[in-house]
Image (cartoon, rainbow, N blue to C red):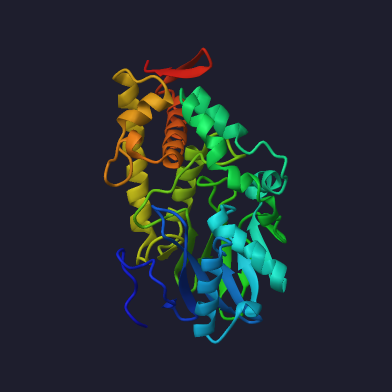
Length: 343
């Protein structure tokens, strides 16, 4: 096996064998922050299995075709797809492939509510986020949200329900290996990871990423305490035997446990930072987000583009809600805005 990709070059076009019979294929994304999503191509007794499908874009499809050709295969050889969650950079190309060759799609049942919204062109696409942002004292950002998501709202044809809803602990027999589904809600309500216990591999989707912190709280329909669910899911995966981390974004790394420990530490610190901001006089989620640093470079909220400002405020809401459940802050609604205080 050749040397594995690094943090600097992981998104470059290639087919990387990360374990015997397991190939990482980074597919392009039209985003400034995330340049690619990893799709994993596995040898199945009946053809090929994909973990995640990518975003249904011409450039993504072309690169997938080139990668499969390098493996002596084509899209017709893809027979099954296990999708970690229903975000479009993971799910929509799986739908496109199924329409073409009939390959089956399996997805966590916790994604049902959001997918039922996405397949309905009349859905109130921004209603949940808009309400959260207004209550966070970010009404101006809420007004921008409809425009940011307009393309998704007009392309319901890209979304379909899966063939199989996964509950968790289902075992997929590929002949040469078995993959076990493990429910990991948090990043989304129905997020799943897939574990190859024999080979010591964790197909982690967006649950555990090597260099960035997965977002929480960004769902059209979802649970009421996403950060609590995410931390519990991290603990669940941490209790499994350590495995090589095969993430959806970033290079493969040797220890899932090491990165999980970092993520748990990050959120402990973040909860303390949010609490300190409230104690210092910030009262709304927008106030708190404005005094926190964002990304590894500790950027200000105002320096982020509108979409990432939305993610930042929704993540701040998730931290405040967990502090509220833990009785570290209190809240009252004043003129439609949730105002937090300490004590």
